[in-house]
Image 1 (tube, rainbow, N blue to C red):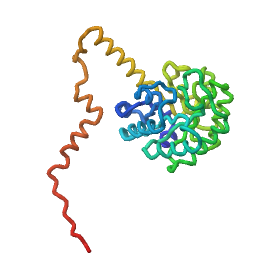
Image 2: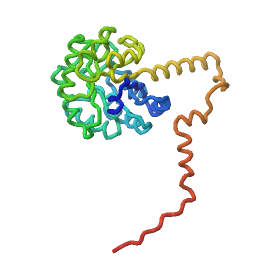
Image 3: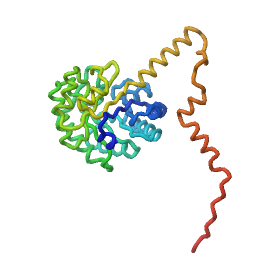
Image 4: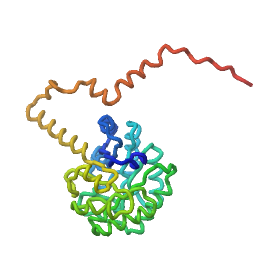
Length: 290
């Protein structure tokens, strides 16, 4: 992940919420995948209101990390408590093969960054959490991203101040959530003293922007947490409505075959493994000594 961030081009990481969507991101040729917290909550049947536990989030992150060979950046919400909880969270995510996480300054239970009604903790508590996260990692390549939701609560200046304080505390990247205008989008990477993440949420508070423009502003990483979960939601609603109204299953004409669907999940690799080791000579038995 650090090699990607050190490159010239902005890193685009679509949001995945399970192993299948993570594989789709990798097959599509993207260099990294983002584990969306909102999508993870949705797979468990919850809205993004801080209901999902650290254990559940880590379990999903592990699924994504083992499903692909590209870096996984994961949502770690508020770190799930104080500095002790943050320390454990970092170690749990890191041990599952995740490349990095972001931790935010909302009061727990948190809310989606693009919903109203958010609350934030004091800046001192937030910076202490970031220090704890940085100190907790065992692998220095593990990326710690400091997210602040202060823009919606206390204004852009406070959000920038918190982002800079987090960078000063050792965070590798700043994530100023839910900026409202194109002018604010431009201001963040100009005023923050470290690399910046852009959160692209469909229907969210932040204006739509293409990646070339975001790169020219100075953003280094763009995540799209809602991309696939929205697409899946809309496709499922449409498919179910069609079946309900027509009282018939959809036609198979022009549809992807069963085999092709499974190939996207590694069918050929697993089929090869089923017979690969047959007929090989048995290992020579070693004599016991002593």
